[in-house]
Length: 319
Ligand SMILES: [Zn+2]
Image 1 (cartoon, rainbow, N blue to C red):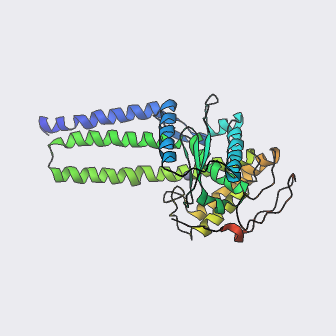
Image 2: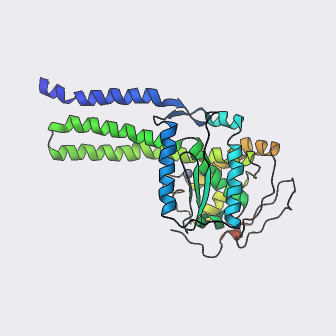
Image 3: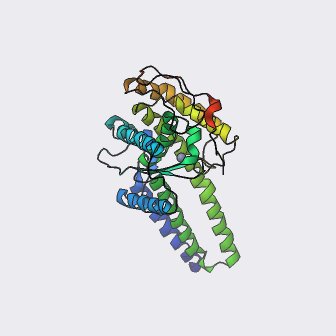
């Protein structure tokens, strides 16, 4: 190897050192003790979440008020209180001092979807309400979304792409002297590798972790956690087994896997927590047609669950 060839690899070496340094600084313990890489500061994460939230809300039809908005905000508040529980924060590895600026809005849209942006900015699309059927069903959805924010999945994803970009930049510099078609091939492979090799499996584990956190949160808030696997059964039926439903979409675990995992977490962790919590009877959501719920208001016994036939409301549509 002559001198010139060696020099070409200097940017690669510098990039590698920078990547390793960033990884060492950003490595921390995530939810349930998982190793997590977060290089983004909390303030930055909150700001990015807030900016994106305002942009989305500006382009959406927000429902200003009424029974469904009240119901969603009540569920949100209860889940947010549960998220402040010091024991749960320890389990989820959320800093005890961290304050989330929770905000809950309802968007009129047929998408079967909901999201929570970093920092605690939540939106529920009206399309997911007929699948949710009950307050507990919606607590499954919102608990999952809040789980993403508590676990800092957004920041983790940002950190991953930051590292991928550093790597791509270093390689681009090293390829400076190569012919354009080699450069294109290598960069293309790197891009594909970044998406499928790094980002996608992480996203799947994020979804599963958000399910886990959500089941615990809803139980702590008093919602019957046994509604979680039932919600996903309805979701599987509603989407015809396909995964093509936006946030709950391509990177999500298969319905069977998530129902099996959820059932385990519910039995082993969520139900014992729920029994010690202020249990609430499952109530139908306002305006959901065909919801048949047993169990009287104020009953402390676990309430019967809705029949699965009652999940499709009028105007129900998938995108
Ligand atoms: Zn998710």
